[in-house]
Image 1 (cartoon, rainbow, N blue to C red):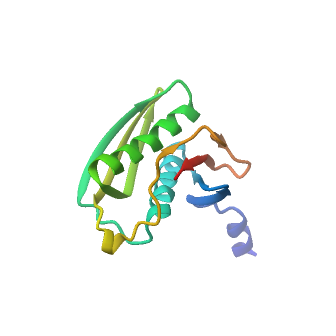
Image 2: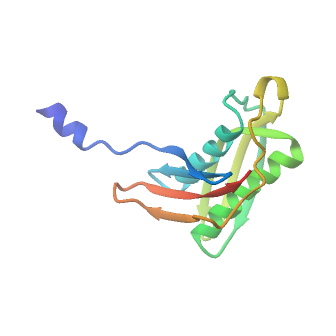
Length: 149
């Protein structure tokens, strides 16, 4: 009986998921905090590109500012995609802090190795399609949108 009560009180785990959307990629991150949901979405973005592990060799810091959470999420994903493109990097670990409409992000990654990472797609940018940041009925934060690939 004690095990049943404990199991029913477990907090859902942070995670990410892809969802179908024509030729593009739907992406959602879930977390116990807003920051964790943004981090999980970033992990999902990387997972769309490669299944290979990413070494946290280099730290890149980004900042984004927006008037609401949806636009902040949009800016966050596009900041990651921009850094992937200009640096020719993949990122496998993320840290987010959000304060008063400002996002401070840390991305850890390494240069793309085509042979080892075997990239499946190249994200071009986050879109406003299905853009939504909200608290779910189970208490998690959800942040998602469609990515142009």
